[in-house]
Length: 383
Image (cartoon, rainbow, N blue to C red; front, side, top):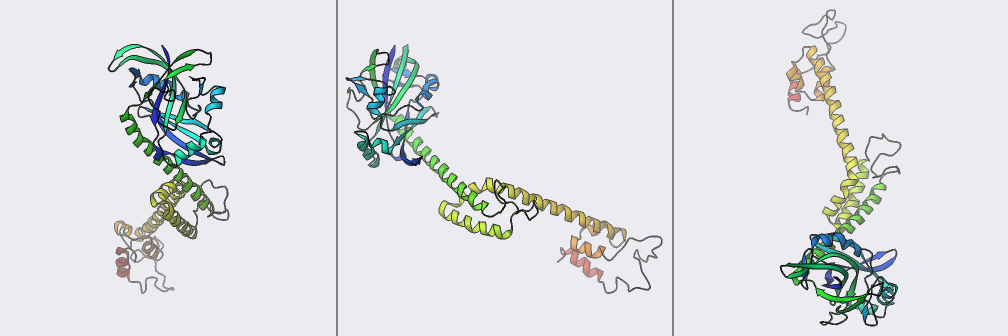
């Protein structure tokens, strides 16, 4: 059995948003339809059939009402259907999430004004009057008994998702009861069904959440763009993808200067005040990761070099029999350097006394040196 069904749903007015695309003002009306395994008019719509067909709604017209000719419904994608119902609106971003189908209707405001009822549509949106949508679906069904149904959908194609301004009365052509004529001139019955009330309530929360998520995404994108411009302004090196690398006259491994970071901090403070610290921190992560990694690498290399230097001094001190190895290792690099500078390893020709060279013609290098004072200083961390 082949049948045309118009599945009606309410629009969550608070989820409607305005955007600018290609320099034109558009209104985006999110809506939902076809929950998995829903039963309407004793017909079951299985989840797998919906999964295989919902994408046929992408880039279809979103006419103002279901187009009719001589009292009979026609396809909204036919030339006559477009001429009658086109209000500059189409369906996009069709997706299936959490067992339900979502779709956004994009309405070109300038085109909508040209339609005889376009101003009524825009007024209803501005005043948040009730707006419904109605998905025109071509169904193939077969008999099957189940809980609350006696037929099951085996295949379907979504022709359009119309915008309805006024909630229609029962059994009226506007609601969808009547005859449909396909492109071959064949006629078939048209039925209209309303999605269950519990579905409409649950989907309202989902749509509001999705709107907030989209707004956060767009806001973050704006912050990212502002930060990229900000960071690029801190360097003269235009080759940097993320900014924050050294000028060409500096060592390529060096990050930007402290002055640049201070300037960045002031600009980031402004962004924080306007957009929130969490959003800015999140946006900064991918931009500052390269410089953070290089700073960490530089710090690690510096510590490694300092440790190697200190170890060299320790070896000199131990060989000179001034301190044992354990005590020498307790010295910081500055204290070890000071002691190592005043000693040389003892040797057979050195005339060593106590492990240190002396020269009668020169002043004693340890004259006036308070060894205990130096050790005390080392124990305190070289202060």
